[in-house]
Image 1: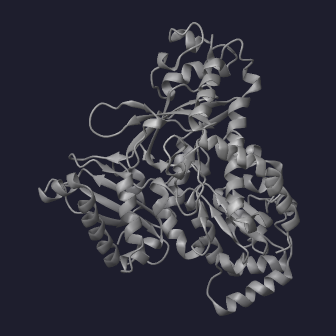
Image 2: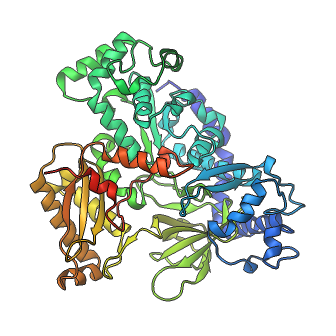
Image 3: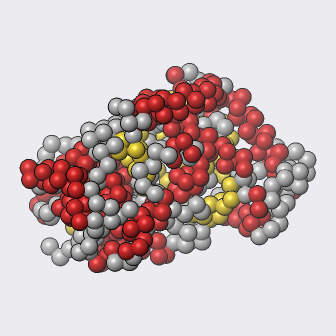
Length: 559
């Protein structure tokens, strides 16, 4: 345990006052929120945006309605084009050349351009630092070993900005791969390269990715290509027999270290493969201490699929992170719950449920209730509806007045509704995750999926929901038909409207369609092709669609 203990101990000791300051902010949540709101309002005072809302002096938040990106798009576009006072006031000192811009996909098909001011950048960087310090304080061993991040290389994406710009230099010294490796395309070749660069590294202590499906792909490639990796380590090659790596020139591969020999590691891993069929993470990374990725929302099912490969170490959620900001900091393992970072934004919430939505403050949150998150940021977004539905999980230390603890559930648009059943992605996720933990034959079947989604087929009479699955192992149609029956029954128990429509014959039973291998990769490719500004890391495979799309029809196996 001496690999990085002196350096790691010094770093943690030096940063401890910052973690203590973050914890004090959590206890003084309301006071910090007031300061953030005053600063955000001061930045826009005198701007064209504020004047258009009748705010001629120091703006008050009440002057602005809750809005989405399309309402702010003209002001952001004018600011980005050089009109410095369109979004921020003349006394703010903020001009386009002093800001960065994050590009992400938008709900209308046009990409969103999100301003990142020096103040919002500093707030998000501090949030990432607090997350890292809190994580390493509980997992001190992880701070002394290498980190494998899988992220976008593009600093114009939030994934790239968070990994390469917002992380402190002291943390980036732990990265096990050069930054240039993150820019390898296509995505599956990048994952092969990351494996080639780390498969001999017994000092890897942490895997870090946004999406659990990324780590699922990584572990699948490790299991599938164990013998290829041993050959590469022995011969100094990089998947020499694969046509899909031909786009990487020899000079590029050599510069990245992909031709480095390690005959000792080759012998060690070859000996492992003599006793078992596949390589697993614990075989190649014996000092792995922690996995960090999103655990909540519709990605929970994919986490279950990762348990066979990575369930032997703790998992830590990154928090509620979006292009608009970094809003929560998880403080415990194996849960998506996180405290709201009071310095990151000013928070309001729209009530969910029956009746007209009401806008409330953080102090009015009720544990167990669902809300839509509305933020006012130091990046110029005012009363901005994130369209993220969260659940209040309580308050820090159980004390109202301290920081609320919330968990992300879903995007507000993630519903399917054929005949009044109002099926939500969160309900489908809960059912799939519960079944995946079952000991019956359907449990292993669900855990062996790369991709599973439900979508209604309105062309049938009566209409039915169809469970689409791309499996890792063989396709046992009878087992999957049983999975469909279990899903149908569980949804009826969870959603009384669904049960009513099934009992009345307005909905038929869930049926299953198996997808050909590579369907998830194809969906990701199609998404990137039609979504300007999107990156592979931003793609979130849907667990529920509102209709059977032509790609899913095309991908169905003929069984």
